[in-house]
Image 1 (cartoon, one colour):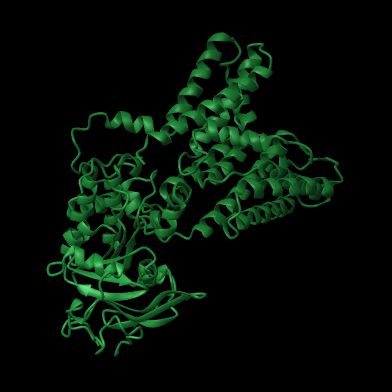
Image 2 (cartoon, rainbow over the protein chains, first blue to last red):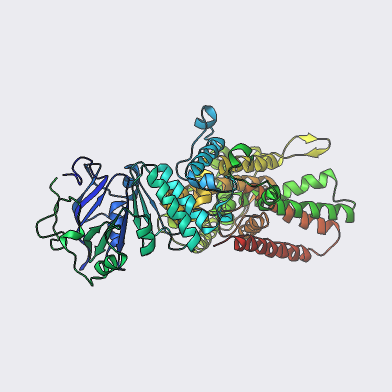
Amino acid sequence: MTGTGSVPNVLQARGLTKHYGHVVAMDGCDFDLRPGEILAVIGDNGAGKSTLIKSLTGAVVPDSGTLSLDGEQVQFRSPLDARRAGIETVYQELGVAPALDISQNLYLGREQRRKGLLGTVFRQLDKRAMRHGSAQHMADLGIRIQSIGQKAETLSGGQRQAVAVARVAAWATRVVVMDEPTAALGVRETNQVLDLIVRVRERGLPVVLISHNMPNVFQVADRVHIHRLGRRIALVDPRSTSMEEAVALMTGARSPEPADTPDPLPAPSTGPAATPSTKGTQ
Amino acid sequence: MTRDVDAAALEAPPGKGRDLRALASHQIAGPLAALVIAVVVFTLSTSTFFQSENLALIAQQSVVVGTLALGQTLIVLTSGIDLANGAIMVLGSVVIGKMAVHGDPVTAALVGLVVCVAVGAINGALVSFLKLPPFIVTLGVMSVVAAGARLYTSSQSYPITSSFLTCLNDGPTVGGVTITYGVMLWVGLTAVLGYALSQTSWGVRVYAVGDNQRAAELAGIKVTRILLSVYVVAAVIYVFAAWQALGRTPTADPSGYANANLDSITAVVIGGTSLFGGRGGVTGTLIGALIVTVLQNGLTQAGIDSLYQQVATGVLVVVAVGVDHLVRRRQPR
């Protein structure tokens, strides 16, 4: 079963659960990401957002539930599995190595070697090609930096996060996940990173944006996944739902109604919130 | 590093100050300046310092600690430290020395290699798989290995008679000055490691692991594998240091080189490699090792008490660490 009928969801989860001893971190959680959208995931502290995100990126293996990528069922046993499947993640403040330059950071773990004997026998890196590739890519994303050979430590926090986003956008083929990418940034830098997120979407990559910052979320998101008590309780359109309503849903001040999830989801008759075991119909 | 102007000129304002900044941030500028100053001062103040035989002697006196320091550099770049390197080298040299008494020297050298690499692999496994702090791991291993070398030899030293084992102290004489194979090996190892660190993906990953281990992990780098490889490669270098030591003093002495570990750290730090990892390199370490020997040699030539050599080295270490601290603090966090 696909989310919207004609176009399958890029990433879809049904009935994910995860227990840590007696603690239920995920309780029948659903997740839908459409092609080319920015989907914000919001939720109070301890709602289980990070467990959900970790199971989408392979850092956590759910106890049960299904995950599918472009309509095909997948299982991620490690972050490497998710990365191989084309899902890349940006983290709050850990993405770059300060003493390496921008080009080295962009290609870290995926360095290019030179062609011919220099590459095969002497394992020599093709620094020139990597710098050209990096410069091209940064320009495509509209990221302004002085020089591609600059060390990451000479960049501002916003620029560094831009490098981390650029890195992820360069290698992701399916999905970009951003876990609180602006939490450590000032207002101006936050806006630069938000612009960048929009440009990543414009290049056709769907983005999952986890954020605490409601104005940010409502500024860029196409849809908002509201997480509470280990599951999605609503999936709302930020143009028709106010920030106050979203916060009320998130904190439990207001109970979700079926109308809060307006999309043609394979929703059970009782509404998505009331049934923990919303098994997909695939 | 070559400057690729075309690719780099993305939104670059007129390149004002860029070359200066590149120079200042270049790791070996400081150590090189210190070396040049020391050489100039001793040349002007003594008549014997700047003579070709003396300069060749300085190079020869640097090779053992200098070679050890190359391995130390790799480990320090991953933000580790190796207190056991001197002990590993001594164990290697006594294994080689005792076996060569009745056996084939080449076989003895190979057995020494295997023993040293095994100890290096134990260090590496404890640091990488068990994630134990390198300081404590290598402190413990140093104690075990140093005692092991004495037990193995019953605290006895073995004279080295094989010309193969002492050949690193020989070499061609050019214009009355002997450039030993040991010095060539030292420079050659520096070149090979410098290449591996700056031109291969292994090198980039070594720096990344030392710089920001978490970021390296998130980038998909297998951090444990890199750490293990670094401790094993370092151990191979320590065997070369053992070979150098047998050339310098043709005796395998289990109680020799007791301070070599700290001396190698001194050379690494003076050479501009950061003890916090991720910054520095082997060229700086080669210069650092030379600086220590130049101070030692020059002060002796000038007739100054050798204790002042220790004072000067100590001051340099503190200065080097201070500079590193300033460089690292200036970056925006």
